[in-house]
Length: 143
Image 1 (cartoon, helix red, strand yellow):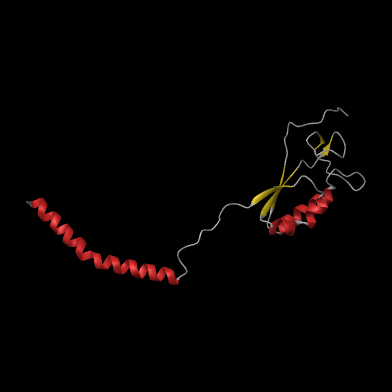
Image 2 (cartoon, helix red, strand yellow):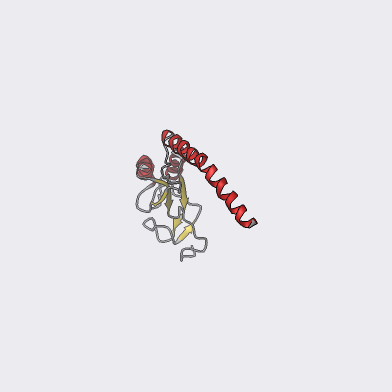
């Protein structure tokens, strides 16, 4: 018998609370719809990274605005040092990691000045440049 009384009291309390529940739900829903809810899905993931291995630093610098318009936020570029197999190499046969190209002797992608200008343009636009570097990738000559 006592359990029945408790259940009856509980159900009376639930019935008494029901109008407040519906009033709260109505006000919350109405207020939410006036505030522009329901909430819209927002993409909070990081922007895509463009693997930019096919153009010079000058071209990349000139295309920074296009990069962001298409939804990219960062670029991934190949190794920046001098390659062992010459200036036509993408750079994975590294010969000199500190020779980034000069006016008279460019790498496949350009010069150190061009690289610095491209990186500055990316940073001014709010993007990042990620240089690919594998420490144990070395060229094959001893010179």
